[in-house]
Image 1 (cartoon, rainbow, N blue to C red):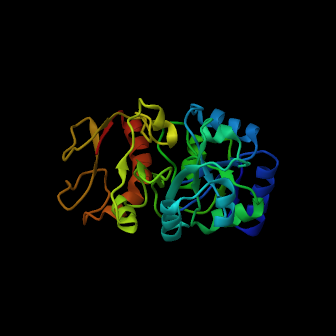
Image 2 (cartoon, rainbow, N blue to C red):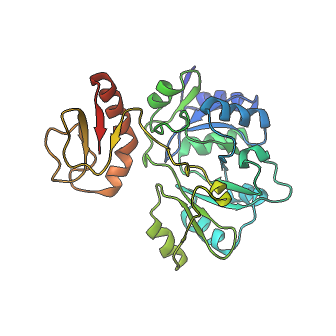
Length: 295
């Protein structure tokens, strides 16, 4: 495993590895992604194997520009409006695949849809330009574990994977996902872009996605019953910690002896940007102390 700096030389080295069918963890504004050539079935299979991710769970395809996006997928009026407003940025769109889409169908779990995102992170954009092909890049972690918001998180969970170190992810949460398959846009996953901002852009409410048990629930990643979880036990909606717990608090009323406060002022954006990094640190501390977590 090599940690590459986000320099021209580091980006070139990572691009060469990706072109050869290898995998690289890349930074984005949301979380670090485990990237591979989206047109290479072997690279995609290696991502599923590395993450121990079920192959019915589709991957997000990262693209460099709208020209590439339109080559891969069909955009309706809703998708065009959202892309114009929020790309590049922390929004993934699930769209119908073009008939001649070069992305291997393994990335879409065999569906006739494709999940696309145009990232805003400068290093990710430079790597996409250097590779000159779409990259699938689910979060760079074992399936079901906490997502990585730093290169160090990737190294701890996937020690055999090369990492392009672009620093800490500024948003620190997965992208939000919206399905644009017909006239009714679907809210598929909460993430770094607020649902209210998306609905304000469209001038309409997003419809709730089907439940996990239905076939349509496979449209997007991040919809399994257990996902983005620490290894320690976890109790939610806690305001105090038991003796056997470490508390992660939020807001001005958090006890002073808590492990961490996501935002002392109750700022949701600050809390979101700190969430995964704080969970990583608290999870490690809890395992060392033989405790569980309260959030």
